[in-house]
Image (cartoon, rainbow, N blue to C red):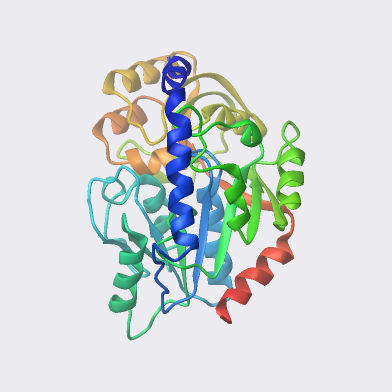
Length: 353
């Protein structure tokens, strides 16, 4: 159905691309203005819609700054959140919003990095102004813009482009027929490119060569699965749990759920079925109830992404699923496979600007 819809919308691709090109020209010529923040800014974003592995990379950069003794402030759009405007998710001490209020990815970042400041704002420049005012007495050392490659209203000291090694980037078409947010040549705006999701099946060679041809330094990473975390009947976490093994059903509301299923296999698990929906999309109560029955009948566990847990942990339908069968989320982290010192050097350089 999606393929049919994209074929019907294909004639709109050139119009979308032309509009994106015009907007970039206006920024390049200074007709549209970019605001300079008083705090150094790192942008992490992509040129395609969804599924690039951007959130784990944002988490990695946050952790690297924290390891340097630098408090970062993350500004995210908070996709599909129930709130609007500028909202504080975490002040670096206390979580102030729930998952549905902050957006799943943003809430997850705040939960995984309790010492980081995390803010949601549709307009990143307004978020930066809010942080500057709110923390005037003790400002963060750096602002990290989440998913902001196209958000040129705010200047950045380091522009990191995220590229998925498993995606057909160089053959992509413009939205809405494909996944490109702007024409490919605009990748040259990036100061660094991080090719993510490197695996035995997808080594990213073609993408890397193209990026190097554009003169962009390249870092490569892979997703590293962690130990599955047991989820209790009330959505809380059971940290002391025997290791998970054997049959599992995958539960994923993400772009490219097949990559999650592949990661489950890499973690030594045996996926026997799945319940998947679109990126950030919710699951119906009947779907979850049927999944719990299947899993219980086959003595299998249900394993979801950490992002889905962040969105669903306080949903009564999900809590009934967790009460009806063994339920876990699989944490993943980014492992740098090449260019680690290059990334560290650039992150440090931002602080000196």
